Image (cartoon, rainbow over all chains, first blue to last red):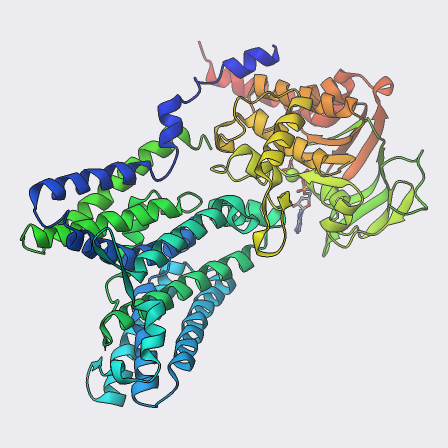
Length: 344
Length: 271
Ligand SMILES: Nc1ncnc2c1ncn2[C@@H]1O[C@H](COP(=O)(O)OP(=O)(O)OP(=O)(O)O)[C@@H](O)[C@H]1O
Ligand SMILES: [Mg+2]
């Protein structure tokens, strides 16, 4: 038996097509392009500057979270509390400034600290008990959802906080989180810039840093990663804190956009983030996926969300569409993995 | 490495080591050694104490009796890290690989090469790809694509990647826990050749197996364990494959079993 014989006896090398499909975000790219074409042709508003700015803004809010959630999922964990956390952070800033008269910058820091604390709590529970993060963060999700409503009602008597526009320093902070600038006739909101920057940063971290390498390893095979000296626990902490930080950012972006915040903000969106990540090629089992894919997943969702409005369909179609996309994505992922992935 | 290390001494040597788990004595009075460029095969049936012995060699367990010498110096390993620092690496059966990760990322996982400093510190992808390709070539493996997920390699190739990785990170002695047991004939042969390659490059190897044919193919010395005791350490010129097989199988026990097996066979086959 010779070396050459053993090398060639293996099933033929995956062709160029499969090598391309091995990239997690390819499916999402094709789908995004298709949906873009569809709504561009079938509605008149979709491709206008105002239309584009609208669906890009929608996509950006989901996209920032989806990218963070994708990193976490590649690392093998879920965070169902991420949606409620965007509400919690907004409410904290709202209450601290309008009710207690706290300086707005201090309130921002306070909200960030609270989000990171929840993230650290999630990470600590998951890593020290070994319980599935799905259950742990489902619990924190309900706790946050309850607190958001109960505490807001207790302190303000209503379920929404208004009047942030009158707070001193609001306009300065708004430059970071709620401003917009003209570009190609569009009124581009700053959150779109955040979304693009963070997607780029996440991609760089994932593919070009040690931490990114460890994220893939921890999600792919934690026991092996531990054996070769990867600090599994630290990586998971980093990922949960990243999700929490992203939830804070999105909370601020929403708050400064409309200068009010509802106690129900973010509820129900945790699954949208996960769906965007999966549509973007993340495996539910961890160890595989991409930030660009998750950003594309969010773009698909944002385009569909606004496209359905422009087409004047019943908005309930959106949920059915979302479910269909998810199913399709999971099937495509399964197929790709069988083609290019594990022999195990 | 310490100044006291003796260049002529075996890489690793155990003298009368044993290990008890509470009242259970898993291993007693085992003496063996392995030098650079030498393959020590550890043979034994299930429960013979092979895994217990390699855990002692790898620093995962402290022996409850006997002494361990690395480079001629008596040592007490507190953890596998201590053993690694002396160039003793262990490749366990699960290989510590991440199937969906590309070959080169697996190769350097946990010890990535980076460039730049502070927040700009990043992976030196080109250097790691090149090193992976070169090191695997030294083992006799030419991969078309070090970017393919390692799960797409054959079992034998994955074993070879794990061995090459241990050698790359400075192991002078590699302990292999049953590297051939889960493989078919041709893949096992492949791994045996990789072992021979590493040996020819001056690496010491401890090769655990319960297949005497595999051991005989590459071994220089043979340590046979049965029920926690050593039946002896033999050089290649001191024993034959038949004698080795007999020792391993517990010759007398099989002989006694012979008539019983015959009867069972004839009962099943009345025609
Ligand atoms: N942690 C432990 N606690 C108690 N007894 C143990 C422990 N580990 C091993 N033993 C016992 O020590 C003996 C030797 O076990 P060992 O795992 O070293 O055998 P082995 O030669 O590796 O067998 P196999 O071929 O099945 O892997 C066995 O009887 C086993 O039950
Ligand atoms: Mg064993």
